[in-house]
Image (cartoon, one colour):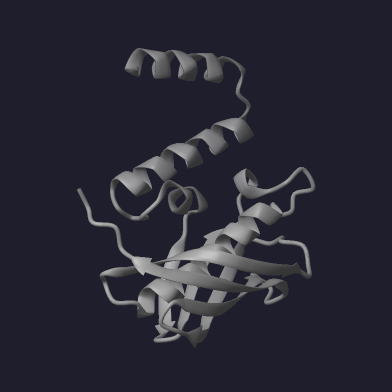
Length: 165
């Protein structure tokens, strides 16, 4: 497998421009961030998430706006914005749950209201309702100039955390 990867990298570098080399570096950095437990998932590593608990009911995730996450219009891809919202809203739910419980998204509604441009995006998620089986959250994504780019609500089903094997 190592030889196969090295061969692909050699082929890549023959044709790659600077933008493509930067993109590959971000992908490699994402894997290292997961490997070194700076992020809990590869997608978190790829997005370079910076996470913060603001209070018992509020969670924040900030990501840099890199070319890797933009669409051809140089605007953050809507799916990335959705992932950011899902991650932040799910994180606020996980923050309040006991360690033997987890949550999975059951429904999410997003309104995109402005283009995702600028140097970074900040998503703030809050708990709206905490039930015994379902939690309801709200999330907002802002550009670095403070402009709201998306608003979402999400419902999360509470489950028993799978045991680690």
